[in-house]
View 1 (cartoon, helix red, strand yellow):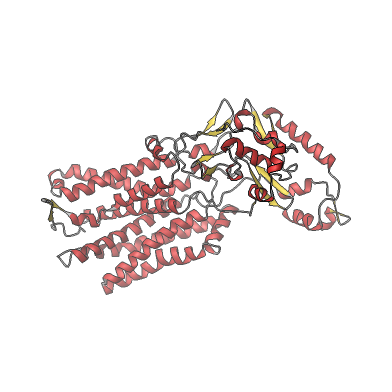
View 2 (view 1 turned 90 degrees about the horizontal axis):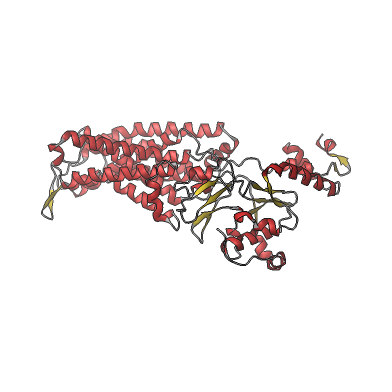
Amino acid sequence: MNGKVMIVDQQLCDGCGLCAVACSIAHTGVIAPERAHIKIWRVEDGFDAPLTCHHCETPSCAQACPTKACRLDVPGRRVIIDERQCIGCRACNVACPFGHAHYDTVARVSAKCDYCDGEPECVRVCERGAISYVYSDESSRHKRRRAAMVEASRPAGALTGREVRRAVADE
Amino acid sequence: MLTEAPRATVQDLHALMSPALKARVVRPRRGDEAQKAWEFLIAGYLYLGGLGAGSFVVAIVAGWLGLELAPAHVAPVGGLAWEWSTLCVLWGPFVTALGAALLVFHLGRNRWRFWSAAFNPRTSWMARGFSILLSFIVLGAVVTMVSVLAPTWPDRAPSLWLALEVAAVATALGTAVYTGILLQSMKYIPAWRSGVLPYLFLASALSTGSMGVVLGAVVYGSIATDAVSGRELVHGLERVEPIILAVEAALLALYVWRLRCGKPVGLVSAKMWLTGPWRIGFWGGVVGMALSLPFLLVLANAGLDSVAVAVVAAISVLTGGFLLRCGVLAIGVVETPPLYDLARWRARRPAAVCDGRPVAEVAE
């Protein structure tokens, strides 16, 4: 909203899950993390990746929507799904490369992150500051500053031999 | 859309967060997974759409070539002279309508708003598909109902009737191709983003439609008083079916080959189908039931002239055609951009040493 974007720093996330629970309460009124608009994937032990909508400039979800319930909200610089227009065809679910848009089986419409109309709940409850909501022109500076802080605060020698060998093999 | 529910504080959320709840929140990500949003109902929609359209095209073109079900066979029903034999071959629009009903059943809360999509074809391929499908159902139903209820009318206005038939066949072909284009329009699923898919689905629609018409002719032959009714139509379609099956097999081979040679995720999809969890569906269902078995049976039946063999071949093609759609949907693995470069993530951690030695030494 107003030129702001959401940034997730996976290095800071400890997978506490407060963001997903708060999101589900804000959007559905109940504790149902399956219906939250932010997902936390355990990519591997010790690495939890919160995944939220990237609000793409050319959103493939909006291109696939037959009723244009899913559309680019230009003034807010975000992609929204109007649940009054959504017919639940799930084309946006299939079209999103990040698998973000999801079908809410209770409301029977597709749903996705809408930045909570400018005050994201996930940002409010994230104690470690892994999710931040900043102006887009500040985002890269924010990322660099955050990365420098992380590098400075971590102890050395944190990886096991197996992890390092796998990392090197991947590279 | 936000609710009016009171916002929870961080302390409240910590108190709520039990191990069971946390297990629901944090879910394991197991590498490349196929999409789960479109499953059997959409497979049924694509299949019935293609089957109905293919059978309609085959029946109309066969009629143009003189292969019809005993056209003089008119039975008086309810005081009207109904050409009810036509219903045995021109059932395509109704089957496609059944497929459309599956799609509507698959939709969510505002499912009846799909009309708005059907009348706004500019929005997306799904909306265009609604329009093409509806055009075919309406035109095809008109052709069928006129053929059944007023069989003498086409003779009175032959050019108008031909134009109507051509328009209906064009929309039917559009429907058969559209089922592939709908999947092809999903650009982040390499298994679907294939230019071969619309032609493969068209070939499958024609092969299943052709065998569906054969089944209809066999049913008609079993209830008609004239014992030879439909025999010529069955023979004619059995001569064409091996050619359609051969084209379909070539397109399937091209589709799989391009998957294997394309993007890495496409290779994952190909492996899922050829050697992975869907291998029985591919080798048994698609290669066996949709292509090989009916090909051999239809060729053999040229000498045998057996109704039972024709029925087995038809059922085999119809089952395999459905499994083809199920398989293509099931291998739809999304190509996610590299958000989480694990190697980079690990390297960014200040773990320059491992077991007391630098990382570079361990690598060597």
